[in-house]
Image (cartoon, rainbow, N blue to C red; front, top):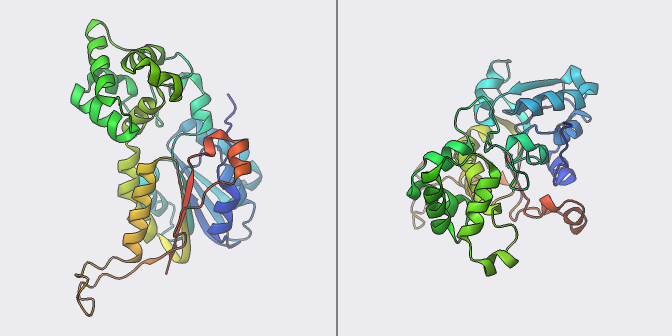
Length: 311
């Protein structure tokens, strides 16, 4: 299957990266290579791009797409949370820009076998890195009712989380839940009919929640941001596109903390904590897709771009 993915907020991201032709850039969520293609096409001479993705299919497909720039590109199959270590191994300590386009790619959603989408009936999987053992099937069949409730409520912001968790636990008493279709039916039964009629697809929020849990998406983001900012050269920028309010909150808070890390009480006349600002938040408010973009690509509707510049 061809790796199709329409890069969201592409122009806005590339503009905000302030690409230097001889700079070193990291695309930490390579996906279909949309952002990487635009970055690589602006590099010359000593310019380099390092593309990182934990999905083997993404690495393979992006490699084909970025073939014209093979001389200035290095692709690494890994999670962006290991970027610092992965770059050290190829002799790179500091970079001029980093892009993260979070969430699931169109390819992953549309590739039936991967089990990311509620639209197809297939095996429950949802692993972005197929080398890991934990899949959606284990979460659905082995998590306690309380754990399922927490995941669906926190990561899916689903108002019927309690009832959905109860229905899942009851259904698996008879036999393991093995397919997305079976899970769909269970979720549907847990949501009142009149709410199903006007709230979009009943499984959307629960599938999102299970995917986030399966791939530790929020944890990885939270644990990586300080490290990524530390990797930037002076005036280097990190551009992060989020699709979920919890992701956006993590990015906003990490950027703010790196801009103003002072922990002194507000009434102290001078700072004594010794914490020094690492840079500035470029985007006070998130940059949102244009009306044209949301009309052309439904998946861009919830996208938000935030930018931080190192000093």
